[in-house]
Image (cartoon, rainbow, N blue to C red; front, side, top):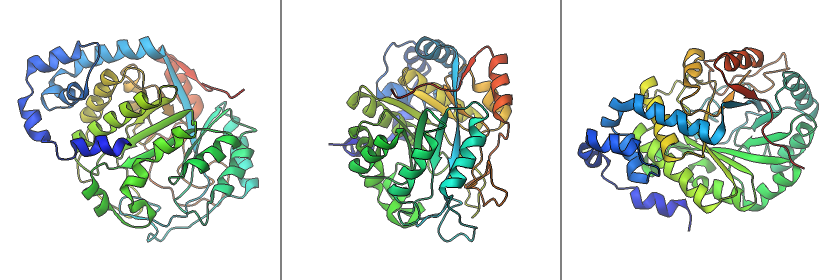
Length: 367
């Protein structure tokens, strides 16, 4: 059994018919519920639900403060390599894109770590392109050992691994996994992933469970909003997170809400997701999963991110670069996508204080 069985249950669900049946009374009643089921969650994602963002926001703020306090956890990504064997039409690292490819040496990894650590950050997200040849598990493990001297919490966003490989990286010092399904709908997934191992929808879908089976402390999942109908994708992300939370009760489960950004290749989003849509997704997720973390990255512009504080977000990236060696090297490579919020860590920290919240640079440390 895996989440795929749950996905299959709703794969052919008539979402449009359900949305047409939602009433104002149903939405208002759902907002006040103590515990929501998957259909309540879908109710809040409906077109009718968008009329009630204010009461949803009030409830979301209460739940977020209740479970997390008035804090925002901070982290930054570090790109180790951009070699990739996949042909994903929406990604700047697409194997067919004519970009400069690079992989950091261990000495360069340490230079990046030194500069990032000087900002005070102690939580880092390690990223590579999806190439087992250029970025094998052994290389990732060696990099983690270097980074562990500077950071107390290390998450990875790399190609899907086997349970034993996740266990190997956990032993080296990794405690978190971020992996986006990108798009849950299987047929859409095939159209967007033309070649490469990433074309295997099921293998990627089951990756969070393999990581948690290996005793990964935290898992962060999400769909790349814009690749398919956002209401469906948000629904599957939410029930996927809920499934993981129920199956692995000792783990920390969180969700990200990444929207498509400009990148090398110029793929245009299939589904437009505006600011109001994104806020609705975040609020619905908070009401559905009060204990789950919600991450908003520098894909979003500064003012919009500022305004999301207090509405459900619990973690933000700061001082981000999507380039390999983007923090320390003069010879930089093309980024995976364009960021919208270029502010440094100090500026983000001060903004959070002004909002009446506490920035947290280190949220966990292994014994």
